[in-house]
Length: 568
Image (tube, rainbow, N blue to C red; front, side, top):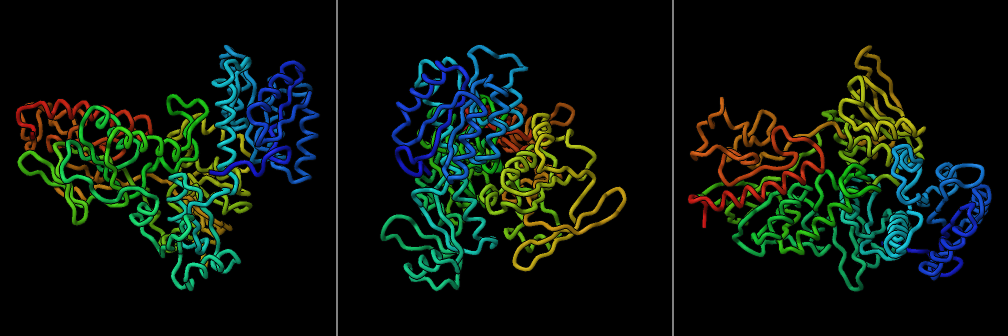
């Protein structure tokens, strides 16, 4: 993780602007007592004075990490001052002081959070300070530090910026929150790194661990990368109570509840924890996180929670088959097998492909499926496009707008409202850098080593145009990852796993159902095998729903394992 650039007065600035002298003085004193060794705490009596100081700090090249404003500062409201401060120090986090108990829907903090004008709020009064002041301020400082170059690099990647494998490695490291550096092979640092580790640069990317004496790894795959990160890639057991295939929100929720309730649990995933949700820059509507939480942070917390309850994680290795033998279920993972009394299918979905050959050839070189948060800084000052009309597309557009010159959302249909949450639509309408083009699709793209331009078509008139594009982020729906299941469980025409009531025909189980009782809500056509999250037919594509079904499946497994026919 990053941190303050230096200690003492020369460190990053925390600025307080408040027109109440007593509150301003006490708040600055409390902040200086806790954070003054590493940060330069300053207090100003008005928004005008605060903006003047911020302007001088910008001219001097000083880092400002946090700006705190009173709700009714002189000349303008606190939220307005914080919005203005963003133009001077875009990376600084912004917090509004909110009177305790002011919960009306029209409060300035509500609109400011909705529009992204503030990053958080502090209750006033803030006693006890440890909970209501120091903790939220610490969280904001950590969020700021994550936007800075890390003081320590766990890994350094040397590769071409727009090469697909380089993108995959940066994305994986970013998703697990590991501090890393990146340099091109023709840069001074890149050449030095390659030379020091005996590499000629013919095969890239090269990943160099930060630990002294560690060997560089050339073109690591996901399993090798997971192993370098200290994550498990092999089985600790050949048998378990519950095998969970997929480490997205649904699979991790199931792992937490299964392991915490005494079931021997194994989680298998072809990638690193998080699934599609792990790429989300900010999830604002997940219960319990009023300031929002990044998909990366949520996934890593859940994975740690499952691990601490005793679940075994096997990462970077895809499940390749599933079969049932004498009521026991066998999950095939390459040449390995794990035998389970029950199985939860939580392998999620992949983003649907555009199907444009020229763009597929540039995948990872300007064309990305998913939010690709690791690439946001790389497109600073560029024109980028987001293809899709769902929440993931909206979140990606808002995130990219912090760096890109323009962000254009391309929507095939007539509106965003059919598939995007109202709060996201409101935010998008308020960001000048974002444009929404309805009834529009990408039909071609061009570029030598990276994407340079795309061709768009109006679906109503048929008119086409070619426009410059540094990157395209595609989020146009999903296709389930279920080919590995074969005929073990019933799937619908699109490949989603059919469960529960959908296995009934006129209230009667389909012929392949072997038990007298009907299948339970999340149970597949094979008793003891359950499906949760996005991979399930008819599922609601929301993180909270995925977590809910993952948790519910464990209760159903307890019921299944108590039945006479269940495996011992």
